[in-house]
Image (cartoon, rainbow, N blue to C red):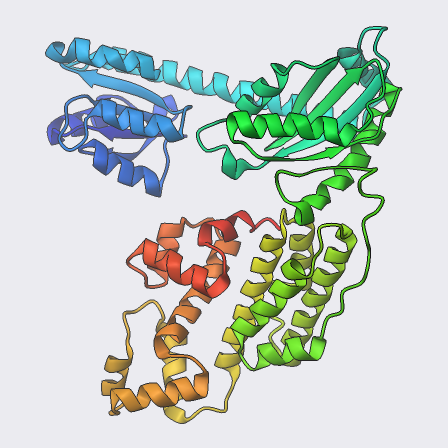
Length: 505
């Protein structure tokens, strides 16, 4: 069933819209009924729809303002505008915003049904086009990965075959930093590359997300392939402000080797972890990378965690992953360090019987392989360390009875509004004294402990559910989402939204 929203400030017209036709027979279901644009946007935050039927004239935010707001974030959503005769010319301005239809009041049942059927047809066409594009990308990736029959491979090779005067090929994978796209789209990157003047031919294929395959075809070998592609990259950064990372192949003279070349440069993309966006690497430049082992003081690192020293543990990881990681290091060194840290954390969990809490070792290792930069790995480990310390606090029985009772109450009722003053009154204690013994035994103020427990639950919900961040904030007891963002980032070193992006590690 396609989801529909009705927006109309007159209640009796709103009810009439709901009852005038058989929505279910059209394969539609009404999930929202709003009385103005502001209310409609709030409802869309909770649950999105595919079709909006809206009045033009409404208080707070009219139908056209609503349409403009929605179009900024969802170009595919379909709109039907309802308008009085006197507003007809005003409503026509909605045509530039890709409105499906505008219907004069009083509403004609057949006109509304026809407009809805047009919306459904457009939605279906859009989905079919997207499916076709996805299928083409999947097929091309199969070709690059060598999983295609010989006849199909010949078809793709024929598509990219150059003239007889060209016999030298270079391939590169460009990974665009999506954070620098802002209002731009991946098509702006493609447009820039295609309009670049080069001494040869430059072909490209958008693979997925921010990944683009570049194929440069020329007559003579390049003195420095990495430098040539780096100049292209610099030009894009200067002209568009979009950053990227480039992994470049050596020269090859047989297009049939493109799948093999692709697999080789795909491995080079891991150097994004060390070099970062704005860098370009090729196989020649990586030959001199050092693979010197970095020593990890396991005893010192474990002691910091068991002493609940989050700041010390975070600083130690900063030294390992950032300060001591040289630009000319091999990416294998980074992976070795990360895996060792993961093993140390799992040993602590096993020793204190915390193996059932948090992510498993396989999940962490997967996160290491999928991370795009060192800071993502560091943030992931900081989240694990904070989580371990939180569980160690809750499992430690070396507390006075009143502190154990308070910790148990927080664990069971963290979503409720609670503070040290009300707890002190409940347990017949002086607020200042209770705060002192709590901090002495637990190692942090009560407010921080409450935030740690809430954020631990939030972390689990972010990683294991598709709940909206706003709903998670309310679920764990934060009425102010921005305050939740600040406290979560203080605990884990990464925002809730950034952790959500990492959930597929």
